[in-house]
Amino acid sequence: MIISEQKSQTELLVQLTEKEHIFLIGCAACATACKVGGEEEVFQMQEWLQSLGKEVTGSVVIDEACHIMRAGRDLRHHKVAVAAADALLVLACGAGIQSISACSEKRVVGGLNSLFLGNIRRLGQFEEKCSLCGECILNETAGICPVTICAKGLLNGPCGGVEDGKCETDRELDCAWHLIYERLKVQGRSGVFARTVEPKNWGKKFKPGRHENKK
Ligand code: SF4
Ligand code: SF4
Image (tube, rainbow, N blue to C red; front, side):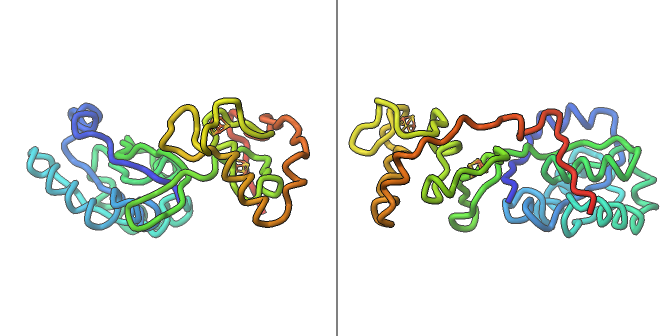
C-alpha cells in the first residue's frame, strides 16, 4: 500500500490561490486506509474550503485513483461539476494524482505527499519494508530486506557498528543483519549467510520511470 499524508493547509492555500471553484477527488484504496483521502477526509476538506468562502462544485471518491480508466469514467460521470471547477483537488497518492492529470486538462492540485510503500501493522500504523529496488534479494536474506531496513542498505552482512543486535545509527532499532542472521539460524540456513550477494543493478530502478506493462 502507498502510505501518504495530507499536505499542510498553508501549502494547499498557496496552490489554491485564485481558485474559487473546486472539485474534490479522493481514493477509496490506499488514501482511505491512511485516513487522508477517503469519504470522511473529502468531506472535511469540503467543509474547510467552504469556510474559506470557496465553492466545492462536487466530489467523488474513486475506487482506485491510480486506475486511469476508472478515474476517467468517474470524472465523466461528474462532468458538469468538473467543468464548473477552476481546479481539481486530489486526495490520492502521486500515481492517483497523475491519473487525474491524464484524464483532465484542468488544473490538478495534489493534496497529499506520497511517503513510501508500506505494510500495515494495524489500522493507522505502517512500516516500510520494501523500497521497490527492482532486483529482489529476499530469497538470500530470509525474507527480511536489508536494502530498506539496514540504515546503510548493506547487502552482505552487518557493518562494524552493530552492538547487541542494535543498529549503530539508532540503538533503539534492530540491526537488519542481526535479524537476518537470527532468522537464517532458526531455519537452519546459516550457510546462506556466507554467500556473497552481487552488487545490485540499480539500473533496474529506472529513472525516468519506464515500467509499463501493456498486456
Ligand atoms: S530487495 Fe528489498 S527493496 Fe528490493 S524488491 Fe526486495 S524487498 Fe523490495
Ligand atoms: S548496524 Fe546493522 S542495520 Fe545498522 S547500518 Fe550497520 S548493518 Fe545496517
